[in-house]
Image (cartoon, rainbow, N blue to C red; front, side, top):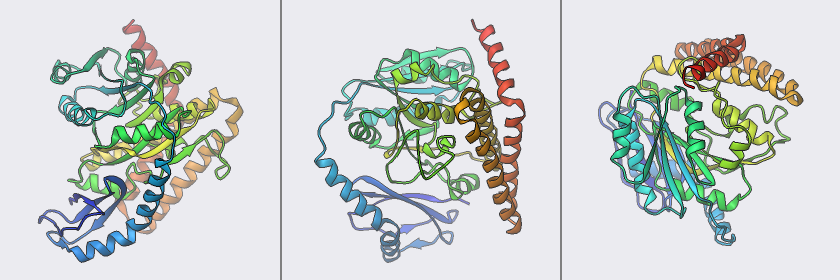
Length: 405
């Protein structure tokens, strides 16, 4: 199973889309005057052609409302007052993935030339790589600063970037993404429109859909949060559990924050996102703490990246397990540290397991064996997360600190 990713410009004439014999679908990215307005997965017979007429009917149905909203937003933006942009630090945390790091740095080099941010730096944090390939990859690019963090763990690396950065605003990118050509412009526009925001997240689209696991993950929702800007505050009247369920804000592979705010919050919790034992929860926790500080978080779809999804079904199943593990470890931590919202934390745990159980029951009734396995993996991860994983992680992190004074 493989899908061909195709980008179309809705303001120009279409061309037919031809699939190779091994491709049985299309991941269709739509732009309107270069602005991202939609993404749809389209199942097609292997080796078939999506004719121009069919494509026109499809785009009218799925993308016309989004184009209308894009036009309205562009008109409103034209009248907005000009706001001076802050200085920007782009932080990339990486470990033993020099090839992917080089791919990301090349995409940043392409957008940096026309950056709306006058002051911009790129900081690569090498998170205890086992060889020199990461440093050598950085040295091939001009204007990229290299920092070595000996303590293995993503939030150790994120905090090292926070200390090394000099920008007023700091963005974090995972090394398995590449940035969209309008990534910096999207962030700049979100900053101009929301100068008091404490943080930003952005759209995450698939980089490729060449394997069954990658297609399946995207069909189940992927990292998608939609193509409309959304603002999140500490209070939300349509969700009694808000701000506990911070996964709706975005993904940690593409996020930005006011650096001084993160410093005042003590940075990232290094007992979350520690690597293989607990590979998650750090983004949920920092989103939550930014909102609880009283600052706004903004989701901006033009602040977009392309993520390389897990290649195999086994890797994808582990990812769902890690999501359950990270979610519950985060909730255990928050229930202890934020007494005012303890009732919401308990309610979120109950809701999460009930929701997962209902999804699992639907998969079983529909005889969808793979969904059953993924659901069981996520539930088991949640159980492990509740059963002391955050405390075990804190002990591991303390041992790491003691061995790297």
